[in-house]
Amino acid sequence: RQSQYGERVCILAPPVSTFEAEVQDLSTSLSLPIHNEEELELLVDEESQGGASPVFTHCLCLEPYQIMGIDSYAVAIQSLSSSSDGNVSAKRKVKRNKKAGRQRNLAKPFYVDFCPSSKTKMGKRLAGGGQQGGELLLKATSLGRNKGSTVCDLTAGLASDSCIMAAGGAASVNMVERDPIVAVLLKDAFRRMDLIAKNDLLSSKGDEELIVRAKDLSNKLSFEENDAVSVAQRFAQSKDEDADRPDICYLDPMFPPRTKSALVKKNMVILHNLLETQSDEDTEQRLIKEAELLNAALFAARTKVVVKRPIQAPPLGGDLVERKPSNVIKGSVNRWDIYVL
Image 1 (cartoon, rainbow, N blue to C red):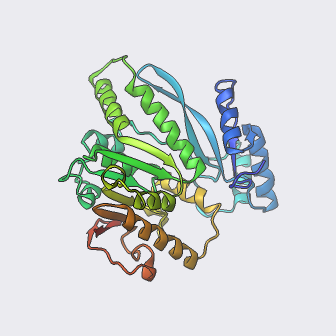
Image 2: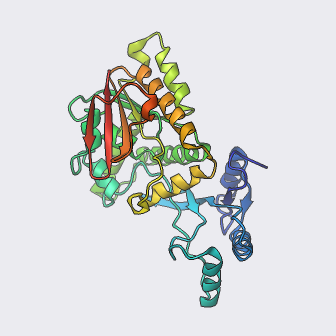
Image 3: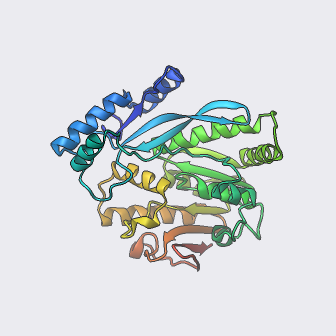
């Protein structure tokens, strides 16, 4: 079976019979093949030795998820490219690993987590109400001052910014994502967040705080698997402006290629590489789509549109968009272009 990813993504069968039904459901819903670890290793070895492009670049897998007495799983994405060895050719890496008698050093599986431990960087940001370290995102959206605004994150991706906005004062954050695999990761994060919100097994004060945070995010976050432009156009055509149109539209589209890959976080590298496997757009096509997205958001939002960009990148849509940002908030790596309506 072929999906929109062609043959680039597969599902990794669990080593034991645990969650077999869930793996099969995942395969059916995404039309992706299931392979076990041995089959994938053979495929990678054959491709590397023959100098061919890899059949599979990523796989979905089910990782154990155990917290506060909850014994479940998390749907994760894993890159099948080696996580080290720099620019050494795949053929040399395979030979080196075989000679050393070790398996390939793959990147760790990554899953979206709306309720991370407060010991993690993201957990600290959420526990602090999005105020940890002075969030430039909240300054750009004015959520720190204007609590109660509704937000539509039209390009949700891995939802980090959506969670920060929800924790930082937004009344609601509706996330929109069209990519089916990313959508699966987000839906699974909602499932696990719901398990935590409904859990009553407390063993520490930290557990109680996590449950409160999960309940708060559950009340604020929503998700729609759809095209961002279509959703924005639907808002713009809404007759009941107060009930339907968001106060703020937030855009964090796929960044243009960077020359310094070290600036991209590991989880974003996985996302970028995954989406690049299905995109062969040239610069002109990308700019046309960016302009369409921004113009649609400008008609959809009631008060402002906020766009996240690399610090040196041109405004979204380039010269194809006549309207220029009303204000810009700059960080060390990224900036936020603000279009006040």
